[in-house]
Length: 114
Length: 114
Image 1 (cartoon, rainbow over the protein chains, first blue to last red):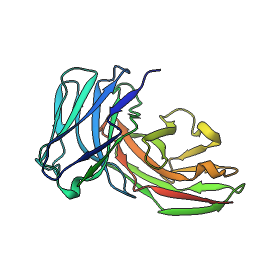
Image 2 (image 1 turned 90 degrees about the vertical axis):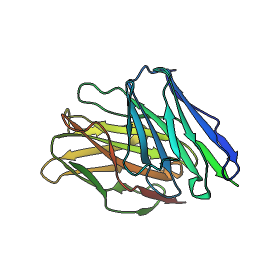
Image 3 (image 1 turned 180 degrees about the horizontal axis):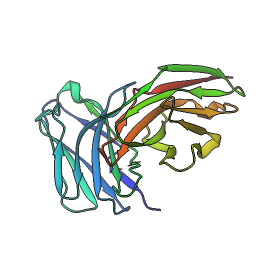
Image 4 (image 1 turned 60 degrees about the vertical axis):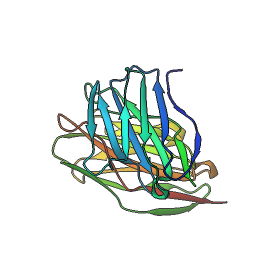
């Protein structure tokens, strides 16, 4: 089945120790998104790629970076995680065409910072 | 510009009784509207979508929603709640001809009592 895959599902890192989360898709969608979701809140968009074009949200901290080496893969790098970065990180994809921009979500990576 | 308001942060029902989760939207273009469900520690799953076709939209697990342009509403309903429906529900809007970046409502937590 075509899908969005996130690895790892659970990640524990130490305060200040860099961490990378990965996302892959078999849907061949041109847009990929990274969201941060804290408890009992809506997902918050960090950035997205429209094809190869990177789009950063204005309030995304510099501590967060992303790479999209090809259509299928996207990475979220947190350079120096703080306690406030503990959250669920969701990857999503969409094919922006026609009248439907529905998103397909991965299962998420739960990040714990100790 | 687009926005979405979920009118209730929590909705509590008894198993077997109807469910109503309310959503109002604002959009400068023709909106596409979505309802997603999120179970604890999981990603978001698309329940149903409206993309300018039929105004009454049927989704998975017995859910449906009606697009009412005059009321700028897209409320989610289900005739009979099941314990497995307990989850967080998000109403989402994007704009055909406008921004493809979806805007999320704050979420409604559905609690189902035995």
